[in-house]
View (cartoon, rainbow, N blue to C red):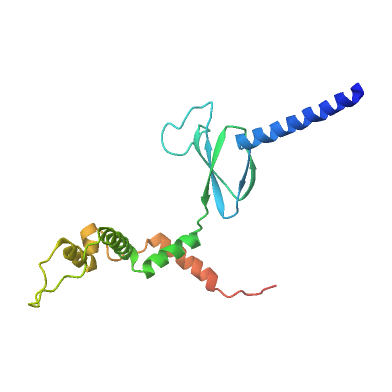
Length: 195
């Protein structure tokens, strides 16, 4: 073998090793981040010469902490080891309004609370294997009232919302109602000319 071929092979091996090392460093440092289009990225600066946020939650003067910018979907490039990106679902105003309407359609927060409590109560009864149906004596009189019967009575009554401080129906926020009306007007307005 000639010395030139060995030196050329070593050069390409070294070059391949360096390329692999660069790729590993980029991946470990999270220099390049991808945000899907149905999410947004909240930027948290880990290191800053200005120190950390003194008051509040958002770093408005370039300090370390949560930054005011929100990243949209796509590829983003960062200084290595300086930022952490928190990917969260994108919730639009229309989605938030749809969720609110679903909560209202299913009885509002009072129904949601009763449903959650009843589910937990049913799980507890199932786990403890306690008889839920009262036993009847031969004389036809019901057995004495117990804790489970009392809890079922309270949960099935209309007063459960009052007991936990949930209003039966919450009026809509006037600014949210105005925004809702404005959006509905735009949606229902006929398109004058599709050209």
